[in-house]
Length: 60
Image (cartoon, rainbow, N blue to C red):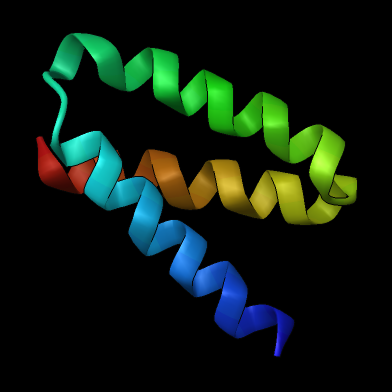
């Protein structure tokens, strides 16, 4: 169940990032990574940041 919410969060983050120019991507990646550290445990935060970086690189 937690994984489903996690996937939706990734999709929402990707959708949000795609609405902004590339210059804002770094800021949002930092913001989501920083929020992730406080909202989830360390392991989930690392996975989240890696997923967002991978997605943003694919979109370039």
